[in-house]
Every structure is written in C-alpha cells, then in structure tokens.
Length: 272
Image 1 (cartoon, rainbow, N blue to C red):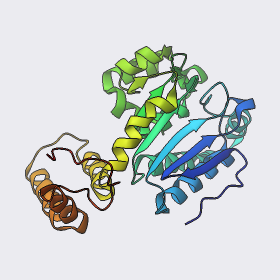
Image 2 (image 1 turned 180 degrees about the vertical axis):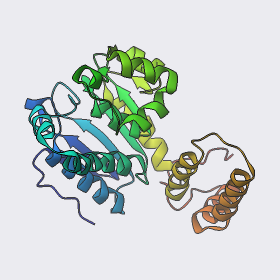
Image 3 (image 1 turned 45 degrees about the vertical axis):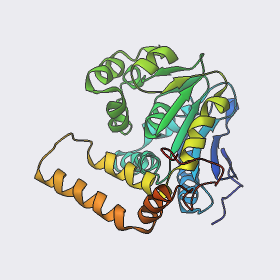
C-alpha cells in the first residue's frame, strides 16, 4: 500500500515504520475545510492499510497546530440547509472516528494554538505532546455553535465536569492546564525528542497486542463491569493467547529471545 503524496493541504511521509500526517496550511494557521478533512481521512486510511506503517504521528507545519475551522468554510456552512450541513458534519465525524479507531499507536505533536476541531484530533490520538507555548480553546459557543462532533473525544479525555467548564466558558487554556486536564501527556519544546521514547516502546511491542488493546479500551469506555464485560474480557485474553503473535510472544519470553516483530537488539522485559 503506497501513501499518496500529492495532497493540497497536508503532507505525508513514512520512514522506518513511522508515518507522519502533517497539516500543511501554515498561512491559514492550518485551519481546515472540507478539502483538508477529506485529505486527512484518505491519508489516515492509507496509513492504516500500509503494512509498513507501525506508528502514526500527527503534526503541523508553521507556528500553530491548527486554528480549527476555516472561515470561508464556515461562511459556506452558514448558507447550507440542514441536509447539506448534516452531510458536511458527517465528514468531520468520519475524520475523528478513523483517527480514534486507527489500529496502530498514534501520537499528536502540538505546536502553538489548537482550537476547536483541532482539539478533537488531539483527543483522538493515543499520546499527545505539546510545546510550552501551546494553547487550547473550545470557542464554539462564542459563535452560537457547539463542539458537537468532537465532544465524545474531548469529554472522554477531560471528563464531563471539566469539559462543561471549557465548552461553556470558551476560555483559552495553556499547555500546563491541558496537562492537568489530560488533554496532553507531556510538555516539551523538543517534540521529536519527547516522542522518541514512545516510538521506541511501540516498536518493541506486539502490533496485534497494541491493536487489540485499543479495541479493548474502547469497548470498556462506559465503565460498566457486568457479566457481558467479564465474558468479553475473558474471551479476548483466551483468543490472543492462542493467536500466532500471542504464541510467539509467550514462547520468546520463556526462551529468553526477542519475538519476531522486535529488533533483536531490544531486550525482552523481564528476561535475565
């Protein structure tokens, strides 16, 4: 599976297992419209289907990660009828969904401002790292709107109580506050250096195991622990134990060798 390289508003590259989706509309502070959304969906699906892609980085060129919705796109939306707006919203919802369900680890590297829908993208990633000057805002209510499509991911990250605050006040908050509210995992002005340990850890782990973890955690989001939950989790561990990667990982551990998916130079955790 090849990764398309002729997009208008994004750039894509793939090196040593690490795919990069780069927002590339710096002159507009990487604000997105229907064209950019479609390009991101296409790129994410291509990375998901590429056997060469182990990890996906989401980052941006320019001073800011993304200003959210493009103003000209918003003007067009204001003139659309309900059905047209619904179709438009479904595309943004699809973007959030394909990123959130991406079957491999994802890392958002946030430089500068990340407003509105950009905050949704960040919350869809498994890991998010921001630089010191990064700032965040859910500004929709200032325009008489709501952050509807991104809300499931933002509420999941921040929790209901804090999401209410920031969605209702539309206040701008810092990287430090974003760290407290679990929107990001770390603050570092050298985003690549901060991402490196995560990339190394992901490369050492079972690709199937990590994909199944993402599905597992998603399934358990409602927090309900009942008979169905117990049955599901029991079935999942049983299935992965007898899978090819599960067998390889267990055998490698007991034979004190690296599993097939791992660089032989990387020691097994727990091996003596």
